[in-house]
Length: 283
Image 1: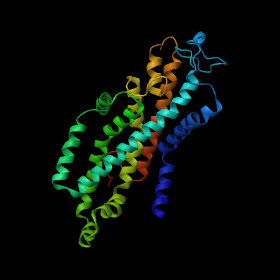
Image 2 (image 1 turned 90 degrees about the vertical axis):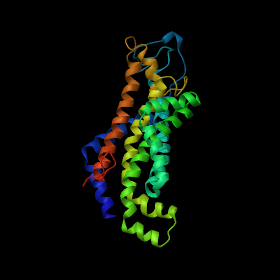
Image 3 (image 1 turned 180 degrees about the horizontal axis):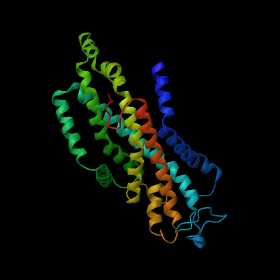
């Protein structure tokens, strides 16, 4: 308990943590409270008010179809953030389990799994996601699954590296001698010893997941209009960046604040738990 309390104090005392929490608080207020306070429809069009400038009626102006930009930014966060977090969560769970099993079991299973992981890691994350969406077809579900698959190999590689030193540990040998089943050994003896690394990687990976998901929408193969996430809004906004710059700047700013906040919190968490972003425990 004392160790956890000291880690929590170190976490909250980090300057990056404090800045990150403030940014995430701003994003949370905007995306959660904003749609409740500002009740304008994000999909309703006003053909006579296309590219209208900021005013009392439209605080951030309107886009090419006369839709309220502020309403779309607020509602886009409700889709962008949960979808990105879900995608990374799925990839982290699957990749971590695969990496832990690979590192602990070893032998042929480890060799096969790591060769597949190496192949996937040789491609950029966004390219892997694009290929998956191209196979499944553009949709929110396909984009989430694509980001999950793209994130999986990174978690598998790092968690395998974290598990390898544990294979020869005395408590693992004692568990083997006592005929502890493999699932129980992984759950009771292995997972708690790599949990810190996993948590830090998961938090930092959330920002990357939101960016990749928005990139897929920006390319037109993620979230499909009339639904809006920040990637879709950026696509629509850059077409009129000189006519209505707020249409592109507003979603870009929200995306930047979200990713910076998550990354800062992840860095602070890594420092508090004495884990660096590569998944190694500093000596």
